[in-house]
Length: 231
Figure 1 (cartoon, rainbow, N blue to C red):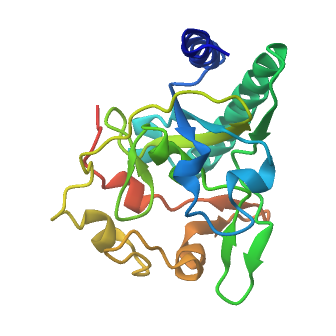
Figure 2 (figure 1 turned 180 degrees about the vertical axis):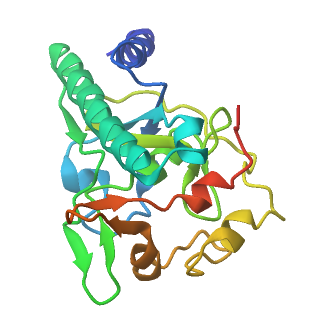
């Protein structure tokens, strides 16, 4: 495929993803994710992979800042379903051009799970894909920060054997070097200053059990206090 054709197809893919609901779409080379753990590299999902596509949708500020835990939980589930539709539809769109494309679930199943540390990994790290694709940069709480909406975004990824030109990464650090708001806000001190979150501690406070037994994702304090992208 000629360079001009690749560029044209890249634009068509991004435009298509936006018509299906993505707020952002970025492209990363599979080689930019060589540092991923064994078993979670793009080539582990598609041996012929050349590019990885990242799509993001914003989380409403009002839900993060003011909404009850039930609203936050429901919004995250809604966004996951919508992003899975975006990745599905975009993958089918790519297949129309006779390339391979595999959507990776937004709400990552913990195929790799350590019960002792309660540390889990999905098939691929959506936030690392998004950073490599120029969608944002990770903050101290390890959430992706975008220039437009801060860390109030949810992510999904697609691996494809289509060789697309990568988007430029964001070189400037979006997380203020001296800001420790997310670290101080964590009620269980699960965040250190090196983009590391102790998942066992985090999970001990993240979820709330409702009277009828439903478990909901309720804590979003480290997301709420981040000053970047508040509109």
